[in-house]
Length: 214
Image 1 (cartoon, one colour):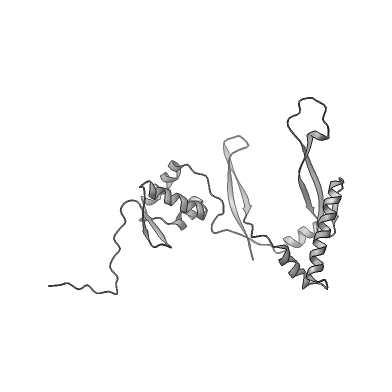
Image 2: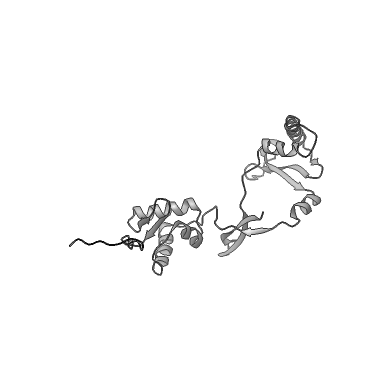
């Protein structure tokens, strides 16, 4: 299965007023400890309970070794190490251990792990994004209005694909424009269709017959 990605944009990149694009991967949900234990159980002679006990023991030793300032190596996976930083700005005073805080935990994968993960790895662009492009109300309405000047209607799906919005933000903006009287909502409960002005009267069904009283 392909790894899905989105393209994001950083405005005023490096303070020069330009823009820079970057890749943002769409992360799937995390595998739970129970799911991982079940998967490993089918690959070795350890029971599910034994595997979960190993998880706990491994975590204990990772914490213990990192707290002692060591760089921890897990064979065939990689190296864990601490990352630290200074609290506040350097004002010229003598720096002590109280001025240093834990910034994070680094992980450096082994080359063999990188090669194995990267072998035949494929990426494909996500159909819809998970994070929205930020707009002001005026900015987005200008784009929606321009779209509707050459199209009869707009939908949540169109909002996502045309303007870089997540599903949640597309629905929120459409609701806002309806409340402001800028759009009229038609369609069905599950498939909203939004018009710039009064909702058009749907055409009569092709299969039906019109009966007129005399």
